[in-house]
Length: 488
Image (cartoon, rainbow, N blue to C red; front, side, top):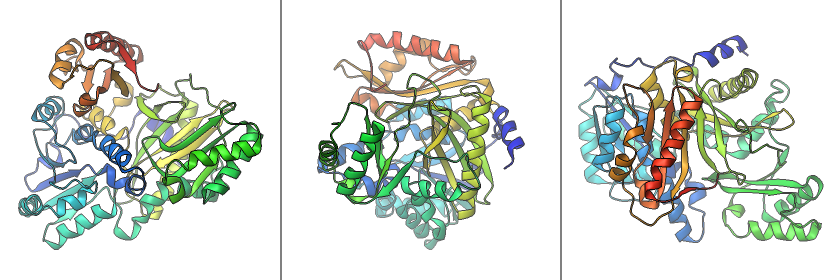
């Protein structure tokens, strides 16, 4: 299981390109195109949401993070970014002032159906210009947030039109099934069951996969009555939707009443009927513990080579909603790090053998009983990919030991005053990221400010300094009104 190698990686993650070196994208014979297709990745779930107003709201919530993933191209000198929403020149310039990027073109397809790959290749003017541009390069590298059927169709159309396009972070068409299978709640659970004999540390909360609201309600009610808690999950979800967590006292103790109440709640959203439902054990977690939710991210290269990128701890609400990460080699102890790296490599080997290529992460739960449970796997760019790539660009190969990183998306402005990027940057000027000091606050997006939400990343020389900078951030933001944290 390569345990010695994995423990070494805790101290020194895989080496990135050194600062100052030209990235491949700086070669005029190569062009990089990045497509932010988050909605395509979750389309099967999002398209099932009713009423339609709620569906559009959730699609908008997904797309609003588009600016964040500019940072996933931080070390790329030149690239074209295909975005589902407009990105202002002001934010583009801000991104470039921090990253190694010298030139980025941002394009938005005219149609906005949610399937951005399709919107791109059906936009005759934009797609035609892109093809003519791409044909001038010997090699075009096409990268996306996730590998979707529409993305693979986009790739095929480019090839048919004579573009020499490569997709180093996507599986081949015959292995594309791995994206949805391993990225689903049922798929990773089946892998865990198959692996029990050879990798006993790869465990998930006890549970079963069922179909239909009535069966799910019956099974969940029985589990709740017997265990004083239960979790229900759809096979695919989005942004915390598709998960119901019930703790002791939150449902009736009478079986029939409990079953009826669960059935009523499942009936409120159509997606519960559309997908298999996982009914599983509620893991006893200390939500006050900062290390309750470890996470690890890998990249599987086109050759099948496995690269561990980083590990972190996730910030998760009691309702199961993700709102940030902390990244540093000491966020978890060495024993836990060895455990999650070992389990992570085993899972990565199974993915690689099956033909999956690209980024993926594994969400885990550190329970009070000492066990570490695998919760789910995301076969795509993740909530930490953009942060990891930015930090690696800024700090180099030893970033896990050289800087403490925290990222949050749960700060809400409580006032009704219009908050914009210029105002925020002016107010936060004393603590904004300083390249000479190599620390400070980075604003991750500006579009979210229109919804009174602030997304930010903080980098400090250690944990104490990073959290001190966060306190300074909060104090400075009182200029916009009282502090309000969403969901934490």
